[in-house]
Length: 180
Image (cartoon, rainbow, N blue to C red; front, side):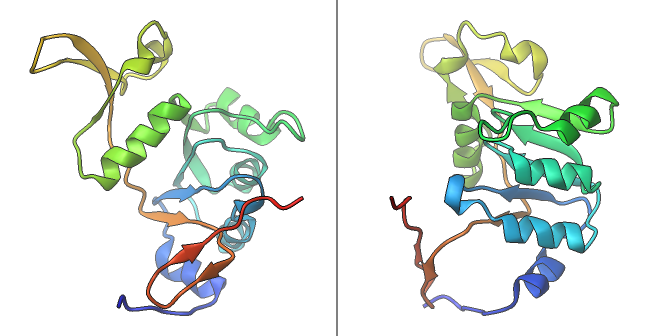
């Protein structure tokens, strides 16, 4: 049985999220941790690298609040509300560094990090010019046949938040799907 700890969101952010950290707030639609992001804003964290497959309104708010200096992502926007104006302004004025991948590339980065791999190979970058915009997407020779294949580095955030409907003392998490 894992050690479990119940704490307030305020205390959890204060204890675990520090200036300069790599922070991933993942989740889709109803599972986005808005409360955690807003607590990071309230606590005035600075210099964060924000990682997220699809940064949307919550990351736009964090950038507008001055929390982030870098954004690592795979698709940028919010179909429901339109452009992310604070992120766009920060990119245009040079105050926000960006590191862009495909969705598969971001998932592969998380998988490489979780598996303690030095990189993750992806055939899906063949024919793409994304590597021209991101020098961390590299090509290596296969040790088996010499074929060149794209690779992405591991992603190991300092802190990751997830929203769930239930958890147990032994670390199990239940997140329900969207109900209609």
